[in-house]
Image (cartoon, rainbow, N blue to C red):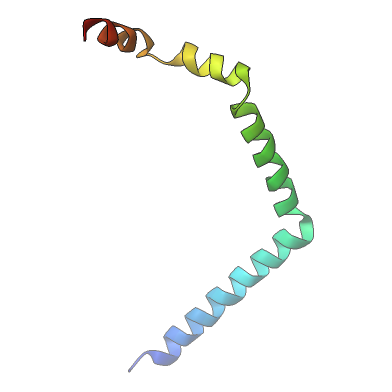
Length: 71
């Protein structure tokens, strides 16, 4: 292969950059913050307030009721 050394350099550089990004995210506590935010988001999505907002913003809520009445 003519460009094998070039591909290996690119692969090594990409792996090094990816590993440094992961190291940075672990050291800054990024994953802990994301875990907390995701759990708060899931808790809110399952709350009655979120269900009321979803129902209020559903543009097909009236057509669903009408379709059930007609069938």
